[in-house]
Length: 441
Image (cartoon, rainbow, N blue to C red; front, side, top):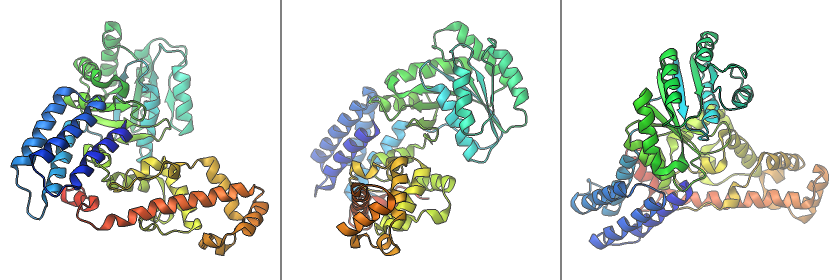
């Protein structure tokens, strides 16, 4: 969803960049393209029409700020209005707290509980999890397995059927921890007995936050579910999951924001690291190809040591095989490469899909291959001809095709990153636009 919506929005703005005059006709065409992109992402028709009217009116009536061209001014308006459409984010504090999780069956709530525990753990807090889902078979085993992977204690019982008792005893067991996340039974908002149970769990736990997990595939229906849960336990934050696998993600985001609950996180992948703090500015900035350097810096600080990742070398597109492996290894610890690259201000630079085709298995094979190279070959891959390929393959115990695969990937990355060197100039410059929009580190 994010790829398709982002591409559609960038294509609409690209047409604007090619025009010499921004008149009513140009604005009408831009608005039509934006409407099509947002409706395809399942954003509510009423909201799309409100956004369209605001963009059209402001573009034709507002004077550009001093020093800003008309095209940049219109892009700034589009950016601001889409940010407004997403709503304000929910509050997330980094201190002692108890978080009660609610959600429908199949929303990804249990996995999200583990992801949330990992998020707070990365922030340096002592975290514990309580499994109060006494209905779904295997719920406790699933959550405990996920928590064991990240060394987070998980309190619960596969035989106890009283969720209230589990929460009472679990809080006593977790009293020495700073953050306690309580998983609850997946339910439907209309099941009165289950709603009564979660009201009791909220009272017993004296939760500081009550967060609702919603599947992005719900689309615009997310609004009704959020409202129902809010009436029961005063939801103060929403986590939207599975944003990477549905065309309805835009509908879910805009519908939830309309309830004023506030989105706190979005889940966009299957690994335990794939939970992102929701920032409307950064989210829209990435959709428009302007990157999200704040999120990139935050993730880099959590995942890698400063000396491991030379961002300047990455942006310049000048790096050796030795540099490439070091940077890819560091990036791999930060999360999927495609997700990381989306945080860079690429503008309309298109990164080929095969540049993202790097897995742990491939990285291990590349390491073995590079261990068989000389220092001169690592520093200047252009010297590697067919005879050297055969020698490297023999030394690494791999086929010559494996060596060629490494060199091919290196060239793909080199071409992709060279395209980023042109981001520093030109009138329609995304990085400069970020500064004008107040998007700073």
